[in-house]
Amino acid sequence: MWEPGTQMPFHIDTGKEDTTLASIIYLNDDYFGGDTLFDDISVSPRRGRGLFFDGMFYRHAVGRIETGKRYVIATWYKACEKKT
Image (tube, rainbow, N blue to C red):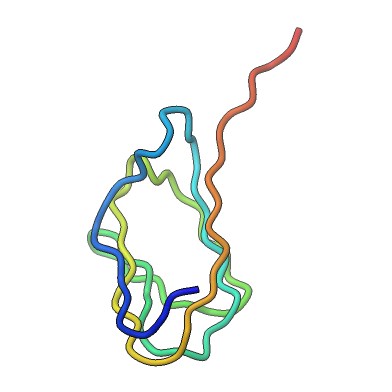
């Protein structure tokens, strides 16, 4: 949950070296602000919208939440090793 007044500055995901993909699923859209930002793109929250991207390659941020609370599911994925 993101409270009013919170935001995330531009960054790349560096938590794990083997991350291959990130996703954000918006659970609500009854708030103002909180867009997901890339260098020249702004993605507005819409309940049920899923956003998938390479978080270790694309710089991204969360705009300031002005009113309401922002609920999302953020997930990071890694490639599975193929078993022979």
